[in-house]
Image (cartoon, rainbow, N blue to C red; front, side, top):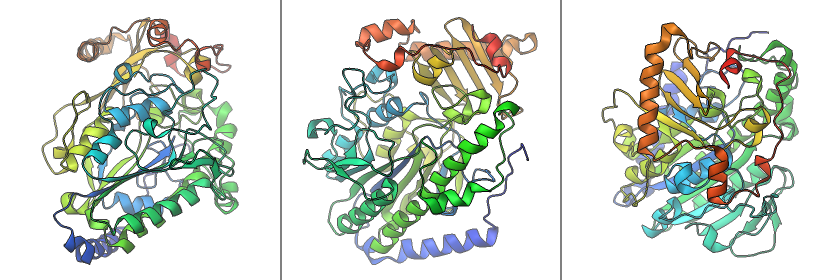
Length: 503
């Protein structure tokens, strides 16, 4: 088995040229585009759940089959260092909707209700006259009893934050018997078959119908997969990986290879399904004649460890959990050729960047950075960093004995501090799999001091005192949350020098 990831994408130069010429011909010549030059662009925001940045064909993963996604990358602005600064479902989604960091919007645990104090992403577009729609997983309604009791509950209109067309559910991972609610009907419905396929079909209908109207649309298509359970993709996609050779990242310990391979077979099967869904949704834009005037975003809420560093899922500050794909295609303003942006994009930056690209005002209270000028060819800053904020330990991190942390992810370095002091320091250029922790080593003392000062500056900027997690849980009234009561355990097979500095 090959332990190192390759770089082949399966897209040769001739194929890329043909794809771009075909796309440009459709985008530029479409009558609907010529008739609507003056209006603001449509926005189609497509989000998978737990899709890590490394697991794409265009990103170099030799296992995954994502031809539609790879074609999209060839036409897009690619934030190659996009980061989910609190890599868990609800905290990321709250950052997306508010443009704020977790200790500002109050969502630093899973399954807590978002109670925004300012204009949300959906409201910003609705207030500007957009036809707004949301299809799929929501995960912002919360469960006040702390028992996941609202995960299949009806979500009332005042908790949808500006989204008008509504076919959504709080959270389910039963992708083949997937509940949702339609608009203001409190009776539950179920997507036929594998939910992402049905949701993609619904998005196609939305695009076909709303493209005919005068006002632009803003549609979020939020898929539950490739989040576990990992063996539930349609059979024909599971068959693609049943006997396939799977190359593992070298930071997966040898004793976990078999489990990692089994997990990845299901993970990639979900992705292959979603890639076909993506192809249909993008084709719907072409058919409606609005591809050129539509800002398409493809991304994820966070990644997944998949046994790298011996860890299973997310919550933690390694790249497999932190880094996500982030593609922006908007031919009318950004062109239709692949362009890679090195500037770090963090979860709170998404809202202001989308508003900047569509010419809408960024509401007061938004903390993220508007990167729209960089998207349009503006100069990138010499340095940028994502502030990592994990105020309380819960879920998978707590089960592995990992406490609250703060950190920075720059283009080159990852630096993380626990409550006990400096914990992780990686040179991601020379050590891309983060297998050599440089923290507290004499030869890297100056680098560590510099990053430590930079982290202090971020803490000050965000008014973050880095208190014990129990203080934030008490302050926000989250004592009921079931994920903070998980009993920590010792990792059976210690892996990596990060454990020696855990404290």
